[in-house]
Length: 168
Ligand code: ADP
Image (cartoon, rainbow, N blue to C red; front, side):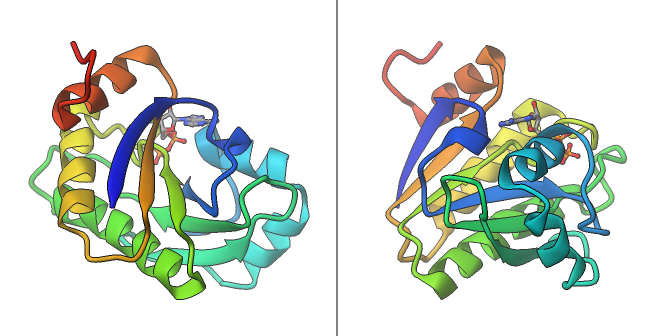
C-alpha cells in the first residue's frame, strides 16, 4: 500500500472510503465529524444511529451518501490522557479497524484524517508517528492510503515521517 500525505478538506476527496474521527456515540460532533455529516447529509446520522455506538479503537461502516466517497469508516480515537493509558495502541487500532472495513468492501483507496489530534488532544507529532507505523505494518488489499492534513504543519509532519520529497 502506498501512503500519501496531502493537505485537504477530507469531505471533498474522491476516494472509495473516508475515515471519520467519531466519538463513541457515533451521533455526530464537531471537527471533521461535523464536516463529514454536513457534507454527507442527514441519512448519515440515521445510518450511524443504527450501529448503536462504537467502542474506542474500533470502527463502523456506513455508506457515504452525499460524499464523493462511497463509504465512511467511523473510527473512535482515544482521548489523550498523558500517553500512558493505552492511547497509542487504541489509535493504531483505529487505523487497522478502518483498513479491515476497507478490505471488507473492496475499497482500493482510503483517506484518513489525523484522528484524535483535534478535540481529543493527541499531540499531532505522536499521532502521526502512530498513523504512519500502523499503515506501514498493515496487511491489506488497499492500494493507496491518504494521510489528510487539515493544516500545513500537519502536512509537513507527515511528509517528514514518510520521507517524502520536499519534506522539511
Ligand atoms: P478528534 O475528536 O478525534 O480529535 P477532530 O475532528 O477534533 O477529532 O480533529 C481531528 C483532526 O481532523 C484535526 O487534526 C483537525 O484539524 C482535522 N480536521 C477537521 N476538519 C477537517 C476536514 N474537514 N478535513 C480534514 N481534516 C479535518
